Amino acid sequence: MTHNYPSTIEDLTNGDVADDSYNQYKRDVEMMRELGLQFYRFSLSWPRILPTGFPNKLNEPGIQYYNNLIDEMLKYNIEPMITLYHWDLPQRLQELGGWANPHIADWFADYARVAFENYGDRVKYWITINEPYDLCAPGYGDGFAAPMVVSKGIGEYMCAKNLLIAHSKAYHIYDKEFRYKTKGIIGISLSAKWHEPESEDDTEIADHMRQFQFGQFAHPIFSENGDFPPIMKEKIATKSAEQGFSRSRLPEFTADEIKLLKGSADFLGLNHYTTQIIRQDASATYDVPSFWDDIGGTTYQLDEWESTASPWLKVVPWGFYKILNKIKETYDNPTIIITENGLPTFGGLDDDNRVAYLRSYIGAMLDAMDDGCNIIGYAAWSLMDNFEWIYGYRVRFGLYEVDHTSPNRTRTPRKSAFVYKEIVRTRTLDTSYEPDTNLMTIDEGH
Image (cartoon, rainbow, N blue to C red; front, side):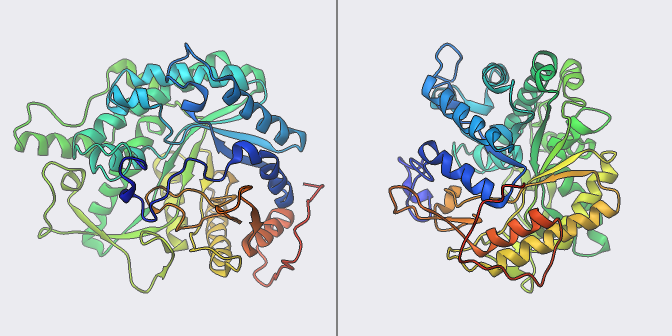
């Protein structure tokens, strides 16, 4: 996509080299040591390990790279947390339909087994798939993200079902064949905004939005029925019939698939950044069919909320508190690891707004924990700047700034890195703390 359609990326860049962690992994681990981290979450690249997408051909240098990274982390008692799939699909599999092809569940299961075979003896924390909603909706519905399939109201639901089956197969492979090696745990990372109703009259549509986005993937795994949310099935079936379809555009799970899905996660990974207001809007028009027409609500953000470098992300820490309590209430208080939470800037080392964001959101998380939410871990997004999808390198999320013009991709700690280090060290949120940013040292006592 970035080569054939470079204009889809704001700054016309691509991720060919990006942070070059392949060669800079020892510096990456050094940064983890500087911060005093207990764990670090990273993803495997499916095409780096299996270039054809299938296990008939293993790329040994790719396998070895992750061995090197894992061993370097464990040398310093930093636990690896591996995400099997953070949207890195072998091109050959995309040419066969990608996540719209039901066979991908078996392809993913084969890939997962290769990962477990090579790293399962040392890795205790696994995540199958990162942010399925944000993969399926823009990739197979609206078509503005890779693989740029425009199939609104159809493609994203096909993607969702196949992805969930793939997740469940990987989970059961790990559970039956590899868990005993490290007594490890395996889950899935879901994205969730908080949707606040504009008025009391909008309470129902806010609940529907949460179920369509977050619940679409949480409900089959964490609810009692192991299926898509009932309101989602009802609305899409009704709309499909009205639109002349012979069956619901939302694919059905078989009884065996429901059985495989139900309970297929030891923890819920939660990626949360921001909040939106939602209202029922009878005057709004949507593409028919489409995800948004199926829901029938309009979302927006308030002007008075603090803006950031990304137009979609405003600072609303109370939304984090609310979504955590809603998950506790809806899914019987599952074990949660916050796998992403952070703020983007346009660069620079003095990032006081990121410092304030992290303190306020971690504070909201602690309030939710006081309410009984079962949160066992937190990871800021992200350790260093990255290729941020359609925004390229224009938007920066890193605690460490990366100089992408440097051959070594020089990493330099921002103010937020010093503050985060102090939070990790002291386990406190001291809003008066002002770090000395002249020198970042390694905390050998983490």
